[in-house]
Image (cartoon, rainbow, N blue to C red; front, side, top):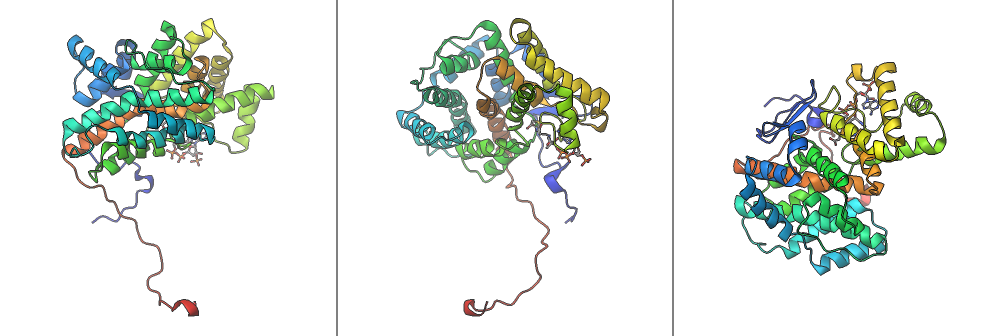
Length: 382
Ligand code: CMC
């Protein structure tokens, strides 16, 4: 057995997958052969979830059936709502509250004893999870605002319904479309840390609830899904400091601070998702506050042209622009990472189901660097 150590599993192939492909050298992302640009322009989040789970885009009839089935699964049990309320009262953060509530969803699962190897049953469970996560998150926000949750509206798509449940008002077309696109862009991305976490859990033939709950935990860190919040916090810090954005960036790089929303393990050029979100941010700026678009673009140009970061392979990633787009849509900052999870749940589920088809327990090794041999002294002599 080879003893090569690959820290962070960088570049290590651990599975075959037909779900998403990333070319990090040219900035290309496809889901099952469709470019992310085409999907963002021409599909809805539900169509993308269907594509990931079933392998093909749905026709009209299939989409209507699938969307109706998803919409019919949006309600969550009162016990879960009560738990969310209690977590809000305990000042829990939304990402952690969501992790707890998603784990708790299994308590109302109508097929609790289905064999995890039963792909169709796991898919039904996965569909329920993806349908219910927006309800969980929106309820969290409503309780936090001192309001009661808003019942889901089955006539709205998943993206528009989430904004509706969170605010109590139906979003306008631009907001609904922009948010739907953001969800599409986050739905899948190869074997990132959270997807791999879900796969590791799935490879033990644990159920899909455990896999999604684990994925949420992995996504919460600042090196992964947490970066979108960090980006917005930095933009606000810059704005409130009254500093020129470039002075701030100069100082931050001198201090050795990492610029959130820059750099990626796979992309050495600008992330294609960042390009699409930058464009949406520009459009939102035309009718609203252009400050955030201006600051992000100024920083990007400076880091690219003056600091040569892109030449070093450190370019804007999806989070650099998702933060400001969500802010422009009026979404609270600490909801950004949970929203990432809301979208990525479809990717986690797709990868787990795909991997389980030809399952092999994921079980790597560590090179032991501890002492070779020690004498065990009795407790009283240590
Ligand atoms: N700002 C400044 N320098 C950076 C940055 C950054 N954001 N990211 C990487 N570098 C430098 C880093 O200091 C190192 O330089 P040197 O070789 O001189 O020490 C070099 O680039 C390589 O960094 P690394 O940490 O070895 O690269 P990695 O592949 O392990 O890191 C990353 C990828 C995403 C963890 C890292 O770029 C980072 O911390 N970025 C900021 C956080 C962020 O935006 N995360 C979101 C990732 S995209 C969304 C997702 O898929 O989850």
